[in-house]
Image 1 (tube, helix red, strand yellow):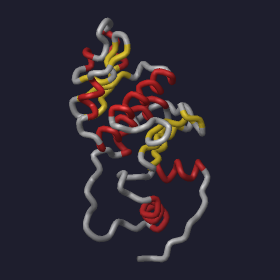
Image 2 (cartoon, helix red, strand yellow):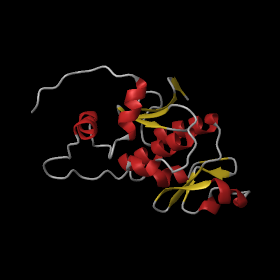
Image 3 (cartoon, helix red, strand yellow):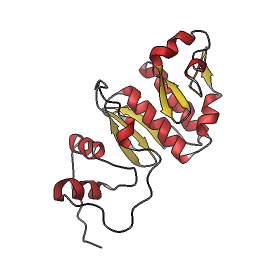
Image 4 (cartoon, one colour):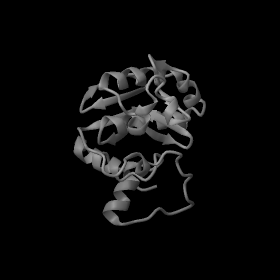
Length: 179
């Protein structure tokens, strides 16, 4: 194994590293080696992550701050609240395969948190699905018409369903502030 050196980086550099991540199993060193030295992975191919960062960010999405998702010591930078929320849900689904089914049984007033069909998200206003239901992963949709407070409440419920404590094991940050 090559000798390793610890370096300090600022949040912008960390965000750039996270944007170049090809899978959650790729280390920061591997990302920098690939980007700076033009090296490809050597050895046997790694198992692909069920959640690829490239598929999380939607083309043309508006950047609205510096959002970060933290789960189990890993950090993923995103460009907006909607993408941060989606990232958290996908990471929880990756770690806990029964999570989405359990989360679909939760709801706030007349909205489900996730559903198998867009129209099932909005119990009293199915017409909202046309503009606000977005694909989460194969066969699942999530509501994107949410305020920061609504996402924070749902993120806490999601963490609890997976046996995690929000703020310690999982959290979403806007800049340096936890939502």
